[in-house]
Length: 124
Image (cartoon, rainbow, N blue to C red; front, side, top):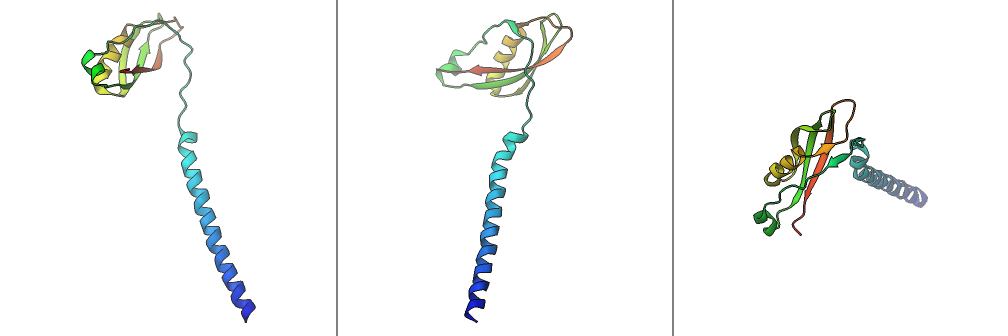
């Protein structure tokens, strides 16, 4: 009878342990899944030939307002930027970033391309 109770306790503890291990594995997998499933952006083969820095409003710089603006630039075959779309970032700084990117010149290519652009505003 004593051996039966010990065996039952051992089996119960093993079930608890296996459940705990399963939860641990599940949580670990969930922690690493988002970076693994994130979409990769293709590296652009077009290089920026003429690069202008955006105007950083002095008021915002003194107030330590900074950040990164994510833009999508449509580049013509001759390298000029025809349009810029704001995808994310600080909306206060986005207009300065758009104005700067519209003045950029890319290397010529056989066709129109869409380029992901990240403009960083660092108040330091």
